[in-house]
Amino acid sequence: GQQVMQIPQYQHVQEGEDFTTYCNSSTTLSNIQWYKQRPGGHPVFLIQLVKSGEVKKQKRLTFQFGEAKKNSSLHITATQTTDVGTYFCAGPSSNTGKLIFGQGTTLQVKP
Amino acid sequence: SQTIHQWPATLVQPVGSPLSLECTVEGTSNPNLYWYRQAAGRGLQLLFYSVGIGQISSEVPQNLSASRPQDRQFILSSKKLLLSDSGFYLCAWSSGPRGEQYFGPGTRLTVT
Image (cartoon, rainbow over all chains, first blue to last red; front, side, top):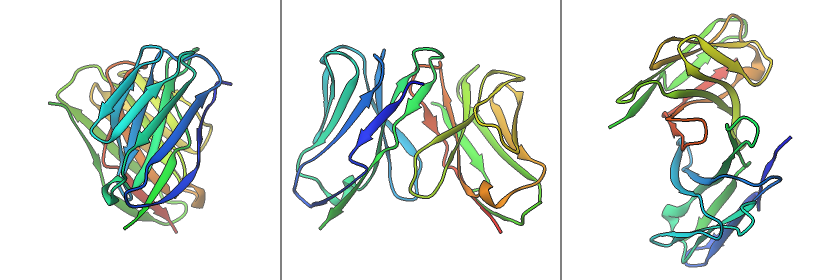
């Protein structure tokens, strides 16, 4: 079946370093969504990308949708301790339309 | 604005006891509703989703069931809990199957 994979599973960085997580789908996606889950909290929707090659920014976060609409990335510039959490990507199933979530990348930031 | 409520926030139940978790959404009509389970440090496992009153689709065979008695109410139930049912249960809604999902605060269930 259709899969959405994320790498890395875990990432430890020093505060101020950059961070990138990658999301890859086995099939073309109509859109890609990103969520953030703080420790002990629930996933919160961050952004949705729809167009091939689309790039969107939210302050220090840069989201990119690949040209083939099968991969995406989230890049955080100069991480802060508030960036700690698990970042999930998700894309609609080509068969059912339901969202398929990646397994997430957990970011730890050392002050 | 739309809000989603879940209760209780935490729950400790013995093995073999029944379960009922409730989720309600305010500020929207005919939402798609979802129940997820998340094991500690793991990803999101979709358990059930519903596109309308009385319409439930099960993703994973298990001893859990879901019901949608009203448009904005989604209930997760079990007749007899297992140890493996422990986890973080999240309810979510979306305006359509491909749209962004908004999650409730979740219920942490520990089965002892």
